[in-house]
Image (cartoon, rainbow, N blue to C red; front, side, top):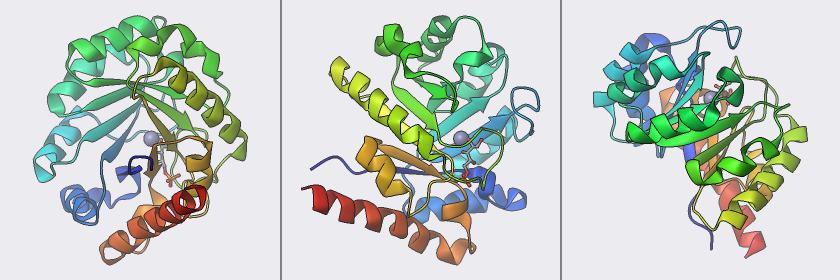
Amino acid sequence: MAARTVIAPSILAADFARLGEEARAVEAAGADWLHVDVMDGHFVPNITIGPDVVKALRPHVKIPFDVHLMIAPADPYLEAFRNAGADILSVHPEAGPHLSRTLQRIRELGAKAGVVFNPATPPELIAHLMDQIDLVLVMSVNPGFGGQSFLTSQLKKIERLRAMIEATGRDITLEVDGGVTAETAPRCIAAGATALVAGTAVFRGGPERYAANIAALRADLIDLKEHRA
Ligand code: DX5
Ligand code: ZN
């Protein structure tokens, strides 16, 4: 049986006036990672948070921080986010001219290195870089906002990236981000995903719902795995 799927709630959907409490609540509710969406109003049309907020959040929970950088350039800020407590740093190839150098820098800083695919970005872009990558993140919405609908067009890309990962023989995480719900999660897993980001689907209904919301995602995944076993 496959390893347990990683569930990474996106704090973009949390109450920003109570971020520490929200992080603790999703950790207690069974989250594996905390997904942190960093947006600059330039690479994407929205502005969220910077390293100081990540640093302030870090003491509140023990789970890894999965930091998704939607900023350009990203290189000047890698160290600040790592020092703030990022365990995984993921960058979009379009954010800078030298993806390989950026990935090398992330690992030098002691973090895991991730590459994020916009809906239009082709999987082959990383074919020559697989040994520099710890995580691949497939966007199943156009980045910039939570609460958008899942783009089924991205399922083929997840399948393709799964095949590319298998060919390496390495344990590279394949994560999906955007519009993940109890309905779309099983399709992502069937296509080969091993980690799921969920904002709206986890935070809807307030803290008393978080455990049930996460369990609902997991319940469908367990059903699917039983079907496939
Ligand atoms: C979008 C972000 C996502 C988003 C997911 O740019 O990268 O992480 O917050 O939110 P939902 O799950 O609501 O689509
Ligand atoms: Zn994200």
